[in-house]
Image (tube, rainbow, N blue to C red; front, side, top):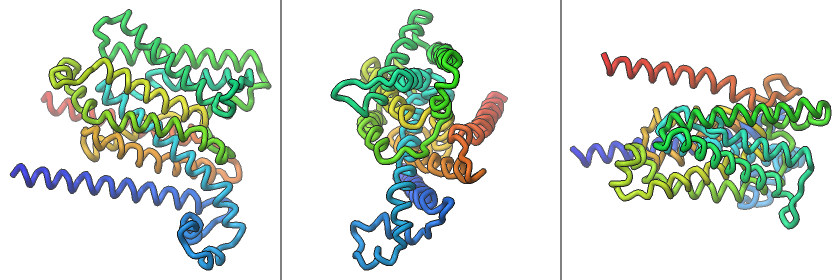
Length: 355
């Protein structure tokens, strides 16, 4: 009986990974193919596989389509995918660490801290010597780390037990304060910060390959750290005391997860601006579909979140074409109602259990 259960579980997990991979592939091809100028999906596949296909096959593709795919749409789609993956895995890790579905980079104030760092960098045109183009994500990551540090410090002062509710409430307080600080900067400078206002609304438009180079190192480091914490997050789901008995160094793992989440969030905010609800909703949906095992939840959230943001960006640029909507508007319009429904279902489930 136990072997049959394990086999069923493995089949379910394998099916989830297969679906997530197919969804991401579909999102990438659709995101590249659809636009003001349509590129046939078969041509998209040929262009993407041009390094392994014979030259005679690629020669049959319209040169204009090759230029559109390689220089405009592919970098945009990849950037949206990296941002979506970063926010989703960070959200899944924060929710697992704090054992609360409301935890994500935005409710904890991490993204607001990253936004402050990015706004200061853009406004004062700061460039750190020997860092150059990496100044923006570096300062965003630094400010996001500082924010999470102060959130934890303040939460500990309020509640020495560091209960989850206290951390989340503290994060919301810091997030509100930092958002007000950004608004104050915009109000004081007026017309000069139009570019920053549009950036804050969230977009991956006209970013190019340079921005992929900016986010990629932070994405690789942050995601590798979090993917290695699956078993520890499973142990922490039973509470910190139980996790200690299971041999987990709770303090070290909490710090590592928070730092990795801050790195991913800071880099994502630096290249795309503020994009909400991705890290909140996607892990929640994946958890409902596949269960709470973080060894798989983190990776699946990355794949689904990546595909989701690619499609959200597609809607943002096509819904009122040729004008583009900020991608943050699309994710909020989709994410807020979905999350409201999830919370209602969760409450109904609890009421049934109590009845």
